[in-house]
Length: 141
Length: 144
Figure 1 (cartoon, each protein chain N blue to C red):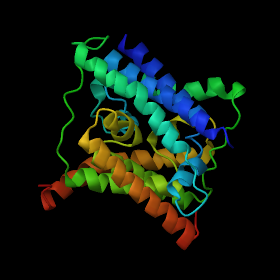
Figure 2: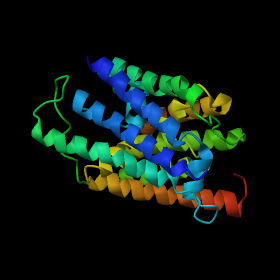
Figure 3: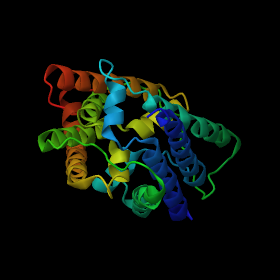
Figure 4: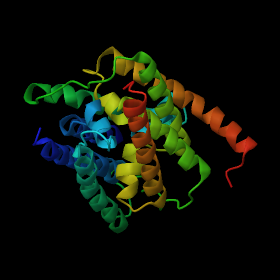
């Protein structure tokens, strides 16, 4: 759709506002993998409720917006092997690198963090290689 | 206070991921697929998100403490190490494979179906495996 970029921009501003609220309010960097990971491995035990409520907000708002918004299909592949492999890589990689698209990408680049910028270049290149290889060479996604 | 702020921040994040189309895996893969029908949406999302975030980082330099007390994060570490690159490459590979990263997988819990829940379960397993693997890697091949 032609208006996709406008929705992208609006959504981006909302995402950034969420990050700004989290930073100025609680003094924390809004990184999805860190917030989830701290709950999963117990390293964020002291801030568990803060993490849980953040994730609750992430889950609930799309439900609230659904009636006034157009598309709700994620078009995720039905090949569960691909889904499992991707999930494992995402979980493993983000915890080894200490961040993902929100932490290294949005929060890191906006403060000109060299780590955020390098990480973002690395995961975008790897993502590009994965899509091109598995879509155009192997034709499995 | 901290809990309400976290809920509000999460709400903005979830709403943004939803309306931007970033929970649609074809848009993410479309952006990564430079040899296909390239989709520029992700660049607008990233660019849009940088604006409020950059302003927020500037404000942290003028204020002493966050609203709910505590402290702002320390200055960004500058060290580029093996784990940063290796982890990001692994993450990027998975991101491209399915078109999902951690935030959108949580945002689409209500409408992403079983496949999305399988993704989250696998991601949690990967997150659990990361600390011991990382420790072993650091012992075998020190990062420096």
